[in-house]
Length: 225
Image (tube, rainbow, N blue to C red; front, side):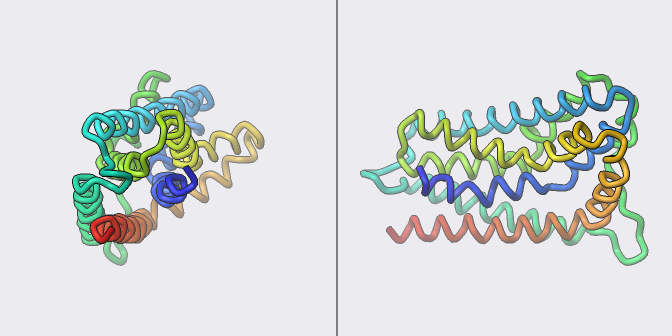
């Protein structure tokens, strides 16, 4: 189980520091009924990640991700494909970055966060975790890494839950700070939001490139066994 935890840790950390979900939570916390919206978003986020991971684990179990104790060929092919997709996403992110002097544009839906209901906040949590291509890619990669270790079902569940918790640290932190510091947290959160909004493209590019290299390396290592 330790190997599985080590394999999924970088993927979980990458999801945790993705800027857009963190910015969304900060904006919700600053709106009317912000704490309730923040709770709804974070809960839905966790459910979304867990659902994607569980689906991939079930599918991997159905077709057997191991071959006599070693990773199955299809699992290595999938990791290779996911790694290449991550590299491609990094290149796309870099090319779409704001040029010098250009203002960073936030998604249009973020401009309406003040008008979100609690249900909409939960829907945003699901959308950014279970429907966002980058998060789905990394969560599927993590589930594949777990499946090819050939753990018992209970151990797989534990590793997946640890993955979800670590991957949720980014969206949990603003909520915890808001609860702990109250109004004093607003300035700190706004500063963090501004920095992430400015450097979103660079952060995403570096993360996706590193994770793409990791997944490709894991696949090549699996092929050579």
